[in-house]
Image 1 (cartoon, helix red, strand yellow):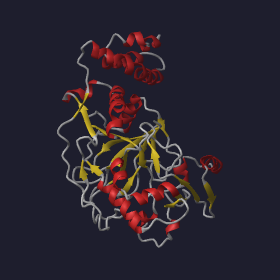
Image 2 (cartoon, helix red, strand yellow):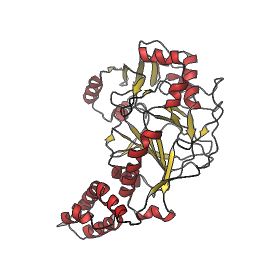
Image 3 (tube, one colour):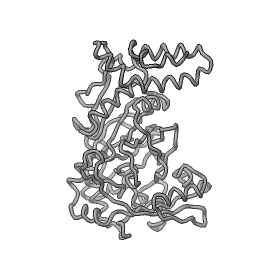
Image 4 (cartoon, helix red, strand yellow):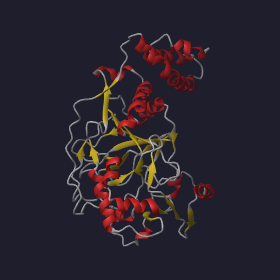
Length: 417
């Protein structure tokens, strides 16, 4: 009997928010209520997005909407040149501060009326977010949704599930992050004071994510730092030295990983590979065409070469698409946990070079960093913010938090397309 509450004919007769609450109430009266509630939520999300919201609009119902905001959020630019724990910030051409966001980068959306946030369940806000993502993301590359009723990781998971976007896993990533939910991860668990260089997510993998989504659960505050800078990769491609771009195009980029066992370091291959089974890890690496070796201390080293540029899967436009600077071992020279180590550059957890093994020069690294940060923009996080990036059009990083900040909680998801 419970299924009849979930069929499409029932959806067609009621506004979605009321139906959701009614369904929850009814199902709590039935046996196996928790299982049915989860099933109902999933069915509601899938059936209601294409059917009920358009019907509500057709009937002239006052359904909540997401509208583009004006004016832009106020932003106090973060210091860049000379900033501690920021790779390359001591170079002569490094920009002084992070740019405030442009009118269209990211485009900012919020609920139409102040009281709208609580009028819809988060799954339905996710459906509305998806409508805007499908319509607007390819135009600008970055969308910021503000004013949504998200306070916890579970809240965000409900919204993400409501978008219907196909999630992608993080197996083979090279950073520090924890899986928090089925499709939700911590954005990065490096020390808060460290600034993470601009990059495009998992761009070294054979099947990189097309979208990256961040959500703010705990903001460091307007004076706390910790912004997520976003970089206009079209501008980066325009401003890079053409001879460098051509060298990367011809030679590719080699990525090297040296990852400890979990018995020795929190940054470990078990976490990166989402497995403690060596044979499973070997199958993954071999399947990607990566070379690897197990070391005497149970650490894992692996390496591979790949393209440094890529065509956008939707538009066909060519973008600078790599983690050349962010994964270069020079980052560890200013990393709080590694900066005093005299380790040979090839022994750090990550390193990049040209595909033939030739090192990038200090001048090349400085130039790429300067161009990427010159084309980057910042905003102050607020709780509930959701940032959606086209992973080819928009790079991102993380500003280090200012002294005294002890908490910043940004969570993330990535999608296949």
